[in-house]
Image (cartoon, rainbow, N blue to C red; front, side, top):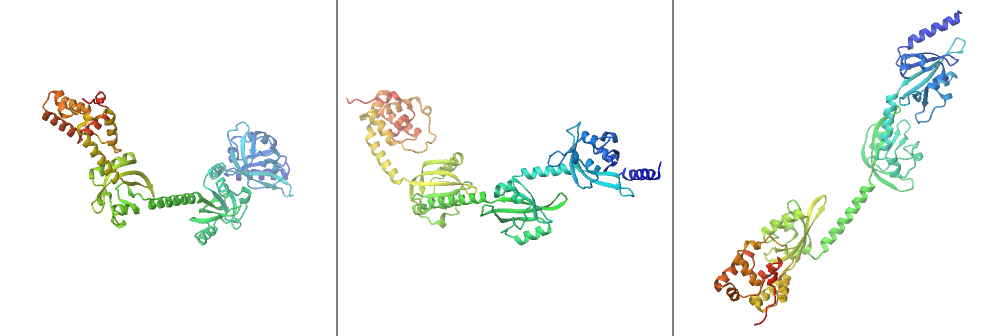
Length: 498
């Protein structure tokens, strides 16, 4: 064996001993592309245990392992790192995905560099591939890429070394109208995301220092002209071993539109509230504290604004009847609205007025409130009472009226007011029911006494008891009560004049 060959073999053994324990994977090749040796790390990075499983040479290696670039494009066989080093090329930081041909589910990511060792004459003597297993790093980066792209919040990433944007997500493109190639590679001087920032000097200093940029309002220039109000924040991070700044944004335009619409709605409500001639008040739903009243309310109830604002409905005694007030708000809490409930309202001077009160639940600045509208029906009530009194006067002897006339008179008396629970027909005794039936038939007390073979005074006592139990005060009201419940339909027949 010649001295040169012996020297070469000795050098290789020493080299192998040196690199055998390295965590980096190392593969040695002859200039004729034969794979001579690989350390354990290189074998593990390919999922094999013997050097022969890598293939005898570069050509067999290409058959046993499929390589792809990180952009998912296949690596042509002539561009495999093992072929490139066999041609004597030197390169560094080539990222490839390595998949065994026999197991397409398994994949590693290698960062590969080459080394050409020359003999003392300068001729290539050994070719070396050195690789790092960066699968975990690549997986984390891939997850980041997917998360960044899927994040609905607009974002861009700027490289701090040259202040150029290297990544942009769809959210930013959609918000601004920029195309991807209008952002990638552009400097922060050309597309300044911190323009018009409320604390621009602080933001720029944080960007230069690579520290967190706190949230602040800013204004983005749009490619089609004009600007967009945003909230911007910056978070430093490392990407591809380079210091970067992640800018994230909140589009203020939807919020601004909502605020404008809300303000306009509130202005319209305020104008309608002030100008309506009907007394109206707004109180909190929780404790009925008066929040606001209109001029018609103040004029009608003779209060000043200071005397009612901040007071509860109970304190200013708007409702004459405390029980009616309790029932009103209890029902309103359950139903959320009421329509034309008859209520007696007390003015500041203690004069009572009859009102039909309607109420609805509204939200004001996020809090539930009640809107009460008071329609003064005092004159209408007075007219109705006068009409009812006249009806009762002429109906004292109902025997003179036909069924049709009694029904019409009953309709006149029937007012639109909330019906309260009343006594049941079964609460009357049998004799009282007989008396009520004959009242509805239009008989006078003497006629009822004759029909039931009772004394007139006894009939009058029964009539008084019926009135008390039914909470009515006259024959006409008793007839209306029975008619509304469909009682004694056979009793409704015309009276014949004798």
